[in-house]
Length: 485
Image 1 (cartoon, one colour):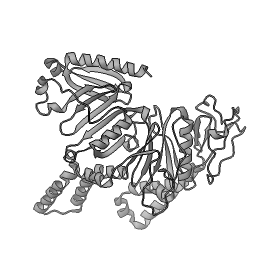
Image 2 (cartoon, one colour):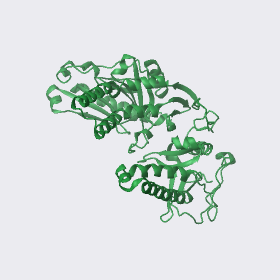
Image 3 (cartoon, rainbow, N blue to C red):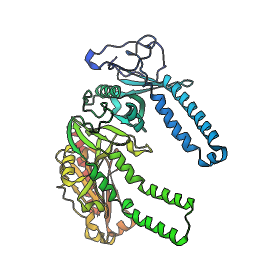
Image 4 (cartoon, rainbow, N blue to C red):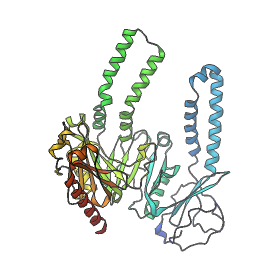
């Protein structure tokens, strides 16, 4: 391999290249025993290592996904028109075609590391080569959907600075191979990484094993699944569902109509209402948080397990939220905003924003202190807006507040669902002062501290002179925090 300047981002699939200097033997670990048979080295041998193929079972998993899509696409009306025999034949033919295409795609897909780049090759008629510079790599996530867990496979997803979506998802690799490749890519990218140990989330788990693996590094917190279930029962959807069911049943009894369409529509509406709480339970099941050097290690999921790495230097904001029904038990949740991760994904489960799905204030204070050293969540006194804002907020004026501290800027908002936003000064990209028509009449203004992630902290309805002074102070502190070591 070469440790010189990065190779060009687009290269032909084959062809001679100029070999570069060779790294020491300990610069990158060799492929593990039992890795997939590599492709022959490209002509000239300048790429330093042969290309690797994905796991041979990858076409089977992709074909199974296609089969689910095909069955979902063929409606029940098609079954009633053509009969079960023809319907099954159609499904079989389409599934076979999808599997053949998956095999062809697998055969023409490969990857290898060239210097400080990961190159991914794919395509038969239209060949494409993607070169991912490892110095722009933020994290490598190990994701194991349900079918991958049953077959002992895993998927690697790369997060790159400025990427509009997850780059180069390698689906699928053996679990051990995925763990070694992740550690190697993180090491080449300059991230603190360790070779997978027996307790690593990506380490293989024996069939039937029930004990979840430990998060590498220093364990910080494990969320009890019981608390996770109770927290989702204390949501408006779950709390109001019995009343909705009772209303529908009364309507059926009074109208005397129990048609299939009516029942199916009711069940579909109930499933839609419960989708978000159920999804959160499945996503945050067995949630474990640890710290490994300058990174946070997060492992969560039931049907689809995820092992995510969050670089602490990329954290832009920390948000603490107290939902209305959770305040009875003194619970809150913590979320992160991390720069460099894709925010254009339709599925927000890929975003590494989970810091604490549910927990009490002491636990949240301990975790925030790990992310933002010197900041105590339970000791952030905030000043409320002036009294004349009662015309804008006749109820709950005290729920708003803002404050400047040694390292961070913090704001509070929300009446029913309270939210506290903490922004380190070094992460502030711009400061804005905005006045609406009513604010101009009352002599008020709102101060926005924007971050690279697109959001930030908002100090609502401050006195106009205070707002301008606050904006100037934030600008000065942000500049000092970015320039000082």
